[in-house]
Length: 365
Ligand code: SF4
Image (cartoon, rainbow, N blue to C red; front, side, top):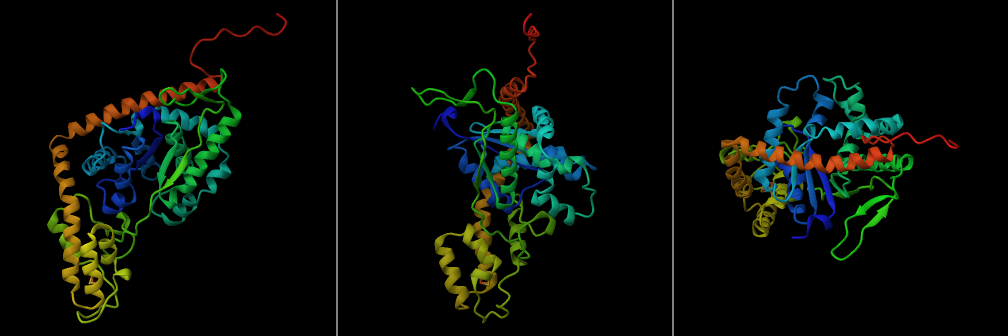
């Protein structure tokens, strides 16, 4: 494995919304697991972000945070390879958020597409808060406090990373690094450091290939639609959910030919089934030589094969949640150390270092 110092750094996170579903797995988690060997990864349980919309009831935040982490560990995130931490356990995020708030123009935040969208769509909560408007600034702080090079995102998050880049540029413009610059990158073996006048690098979005993952009703899998298959669903539940899943609407009778390309079950096969099974589905569905019940059974088999080992691994942590909490504490400690180094650069660049410095004599004295 490549040494951490020479690898690009990644920051990503999830809000603690409770147990994760297959959409979370395919949209992010699966990709994170793969990235661990190539990048130096920081994965954050974004519990403060949960408060931007759910500030009125915080009773489940801690429990949900633990649930998310159990699913991460079960799916293959490895604390030996990655830093796994809770945002609120690294208070420096809040300090950097405050400083970024000072330099971020309001117009930038009002133009963020998800801001307008969510204000229009979420009617059961009052989102007219300072925290909700400013959450992309908190996200910028989350990313930049680790000087992340890369942020894996879905399409809907690209605008947030762009805003992060603009915040970094604006900060760097106001406050160039002091003392001749700071290290831009650690040297390769035998190489030398490169220097920059910028405190923050501008992170790049790494677009996660968006597989179409439908829920049981055919719409995008989402907790708010109640159409999810959870990573923790036991086999009988998975099979039952598959049984009621919608199919190609043109296939009304068993004798009607269908089309896996317009069938949500067909989409599941494309993601989770083997090539051999996919070939059977394609020919059997199009020639009406298989029934939907049989086809759904094959999809359930593929899901159970994926989920069983995760659920086995999860059990170990469920039986002893202290193990997972220890991982979070250790991860938060490592994240705090990295964040503290950045905050030293930030304070020095702003002329607000915590060290005592004697006032400079006035010119001519
Ligand atoms: S056979 Fe399979 S792919 Fe074809 S319509 Fe039925 S469930 Fe969908």
